[in-house]
Image 1 (cartoon, rainbow, N blue to C red):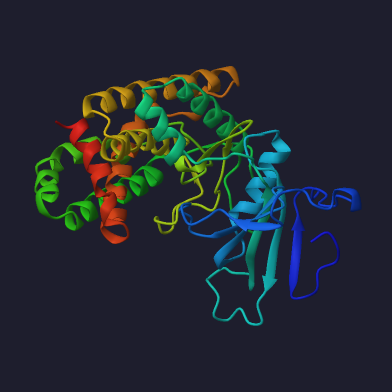
Image 2 (image 1 turned 120 degrees about the horizontal axis):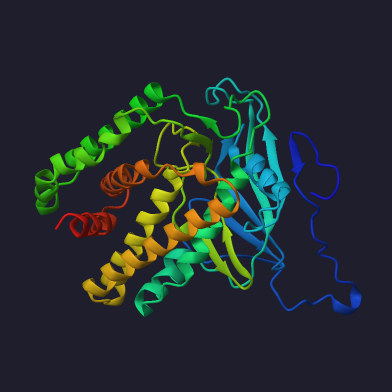
Amino acid sequence: MADDVPAPFAVRRLGPLPSLSHGEAAADTGVPAERDFGEHVDQTNYSVVVSDRVVVKWLTPPAPLPHPAPDVLAHLAASGFEEIAPPYAALTLREKSSAAGAAGSTGEVLLALVTGYLPEARDGWEWCVDEAEAGRTSFARDLGRLTADLHVALSTFRPPAPEPAPEPATVAHAHGDAGRYGARAEEALREALALTDGEDGAWLATREATLRRELEPLHRPLGPTPLIRIHGDLHVGQILRWRDGYSVIDFDGNPTVTGAEPYQPAARDVAQLATSLDHVAQVAVRRRGTPPEHAARWARETREAMLSAYRHRLAERGRPELLDEALLRPFEVEQECRELVYAARHLPRWRYAPMGVLRTWYP
């Protein structure tokens, strides 16, 4: 990747690669030349750590271009947002024929992303569950500030042509956007009701009217709500805690939502992050034996602290308009419906988490 790359491969360089040369006197660095993260790490793709300096994430399967991650990572790095692994390169391959490719594909696919290695990194489904078990909440302020800084940086993102995009942080024109968001949320609720069976399904059916009322704001005109390039799948599992702080990962978009727009209200990310804290509380109850009342209190306190810090940071950065408060609750309810759909279709054992959250919200 440091030199010329033979066709049909190509490398897009996002930043200078670190040197892996140690010289004859220090040929043995004491770390493996290559290793993976191990079977305990749940990941859609496959990552290889090189000399504890670089991570090569192989996309399985390769993804058609244009792909959001290289452009978004490059923009965040250029914007001074430091809570990401340093982006180094993207490895691509031009396919022999694009006839069978995805619609809109260039005939080129993204094979791998190369970023910096973050020592002692743990994802949020590990470190955040530890916090819940111990009853600690101070970290939530860090998450709020980090998310606000991320959204301020993403609010100025414009992809290269030909991908269409609104002007940075443009105003959402109400009726069309409201109708689309409302229809998608209603579809998520219908699917959740249809796919959730047994006692959980019966309980959910008794709350259908309440859930539908919660989604009503998504059917109304949105008002002056900025649309920005959001993360799209922002939950605690996408926030690593490592030796020197936090890092946001995985800008590939939400793999469980077909056709999700990259430009949406920032409240979409904030709602998903907030609900993931509720999910952490449910994991702590199920796997760590945390008393349910303690977990529920922890979830309330962390959500409030995260949201307060997020609002405060946006105000500090002069961008309080990025958060439309009216969208938070309906997006949260929609997210729990999507979690139930995901559980039914892909991971049945996960259903306890969104059901636990909904039972806490609507006792």
